[in-house]
Length: 197
Image (cartoon, rainbow, N blue to C red):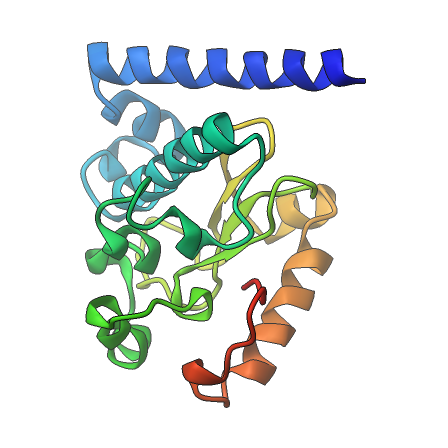
């Protein structure tokens, strides 16, 4: 069993190295073109995927050093993610309502996971990280139900509602969204230790 975990980790690490080499040689734009189409290689789709890729890199570095993923995304800052804004989503991609409500937390002394642009599920689930639905700017070339998802194998996929249902992820996402919406009425300072969003 331990050998299988080590093998999985090495395979995941190799995938990250290959993607990093590809990005270093050719840039991220070919990957974005493949995922979103050519028109998004420098736009909103590009920024959304790059954010997830950056978070994935930080998660992998954390796991390499500690043997497991962090309990919360905020544990990545400042040792693994230097710019906390990455966790609040790309500025150009966030709709104004979300930005007005949550961007003030970027400069806060303490950062709360519930204010990030992503739901974090950890490494023992069917998905590791998913964009929060409903906070992204509308774009005529990206369907409104599209979300970028980081999977436990390190892959980043762009999934619409139908694909999420097919993969069995939508129920998990809706449960987290319901928890988030019910806690959204509370002040961020009421967050309990160990609470994951």
